[in-house]
Length: 477
Image 1 (cartoon, rainbow, N blue to C red):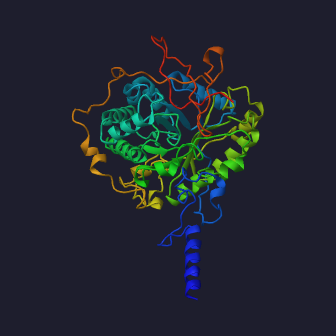
Image 2: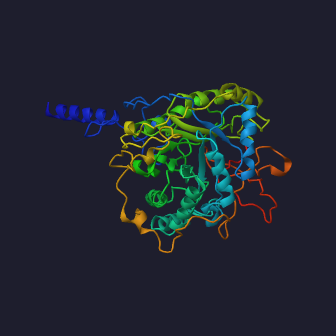
Image 3: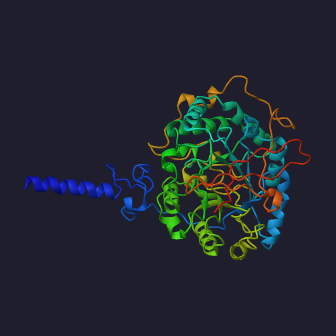
């Protein structure tokens, strides 16, 4: 009987563990219960229905949306043209990228940032989303040991001045409320800003950057943690830097691999369901900075299901990647998907803009009423309080991540109207598909990543070829 009681106790403990209940009885999300992606990767390795799921929130308004239509300032008019194609839809989100060839790129081209900020400021309901590399060259195919060394240098403050200059420039130009997608797709292998070579250093470096950028007076940045959907080179939960330094849980979601269904994308480890549960447990909204077609051709069912998914979850914003093969407007290769996208989003009036965001609902203190802010976009402005975290993910910043330890000699004045010395503006792929702008095909390194395509946009009166832009997908397959 003694052996029987021990066996029974062991069985009960195993059941509690499988159900996601720790010693304190708190529920765990499926993403939290799947930390060993490199040891046991595969949907069959865990029971999907074993753990109680957090209640995910449904969007109570039309999700603000837009499209990536190009990074140069002269692509901004494309937003209005896309709006006309969508029967006058209110595109409230502008999405652009900083190039990652040099630290001057990361500091941002003044003219480009100024015009994007002007687009944002011309309508109080608009949001600017800016992808920012963490390391340069961001597409340099650096080996893991070099990446690990750079991450450790960054975590100890070697690159603080570049992010400080970017933050000051954005605030001075009117972009102080920009959503910053920092080090995106970090769970893959495409970019130097990846997490896999040293997750601990990557997280410390992220925290350092956020401390630096939030030290700038007048900023109300929101930081978007955006991995690839699914299990890539490393489980993205291993890269999560903490609730107090993340405002949005994003994912880049393309229709791949070949033969997969949308239900696969929902149920896969670290897929769409895990994303919304992970975010719900932390009181964070979700986002979809990049989404579109890829490996399965013209797929209207993916478009229909993806739009429905974003509309029925607590989605802060979504921006489709609108160039071939991903997009629907100027890419003529997806006529059936284009028709569905236009039907679903055509004529949308966008999300309403309330006078006062409900900061108290998030436990963030009270933000004085200010027209033009909509929840939860400005949660970082609520009495300067951080979002509630948990002991595993939101430890207080160490002295090395404190903005008070910024390097001496860092710029303290507002940026000049000219570009910083050595800075080069960001380029973008053309949304159209002229022969001279066709990206160079190359094999994708993993099911959830693609090798960046060669950008084609050039600035007015170029004197040299524009730098490559981080964030493109290969056009193979």
